[in-house]
Length: 417
Figure (cartoon, rainbow, N blue to C red):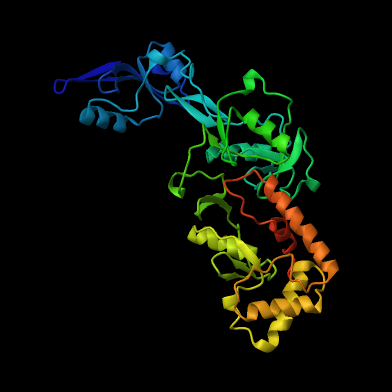
């Protein structure tokens, strides 16, 4: 061993020859004889290309994870008085992860002697060929991919059910629990346990119905009791809000303002693939279909709800008078799913073409025949009942047509607006 002394700034460089008999050369870092606690630097090289464990076993004081060339070591000692990124051997043999709590799907690992939470979900019992659907309505290749994505993106999303994401509970098979639909019509598998045990009560949560629940278990119990899924919006109690600046919506939704905040779902793609089905919004704007209205809500952050199917009265001017009867006959037949009686068609055309602001409702005019009235009354009663039972969300978007949007995926030929 040769020791080189430099009086200013008194740097000691320990050069080792013939140390291969002490430790075998391996892919590793460098071992040092001294550790400056003030600067956190390694001083006095003992051995190169050695593992952390071997360094500390031979009474080394510090270790650098990377292997450094002789030139790099000399330059660092001369210019900086030591080498940075030094790991003291005082932590060797100690579990640095002791007392460290990582998030879900994370495990604690030691990195440079310091604890670090890494994403490492338990995939031991995962069927890698089984796709799963998340509460964000996204389909994942398998449960392991879902867990890793949730961990890496730090998203508060739950596993909804196994299999491709569906539009209703009809084709969903729940391994545990019951399939329920939320306010957007999305199915979820909810565990309907009879009661919440103490170990399941882990802090209050705020649901998408803007109600605070004692725990996620209590939220699920309420979902089962009312027969509709309530999704956890965030941990902690719900906070009152009068505008979108302090209002929280579930993952994938945006907040739009009407008389109060609303959580609205944004279309994931363009609306051109949906069939043309004009409707008049509460802003007196005619939209090509329900998707187009939702797209406008997301773009402007202003809440709009449907007034009636068919164009708004003020948007009739661009339709030639000779085409209006056929135009409305198409929409009315689509709306009622059958041909509407001649008196009803004539009355509705007269109402809109004279620029009155009355709404086009399912109950129709007094001129509508008895068969149409009976069907309309039945639909209206079902909608009213649905509004009374809808306890999910900040304020019901009054859009029972959500289920019909899926039907509109089939391209239909229709007149241009």
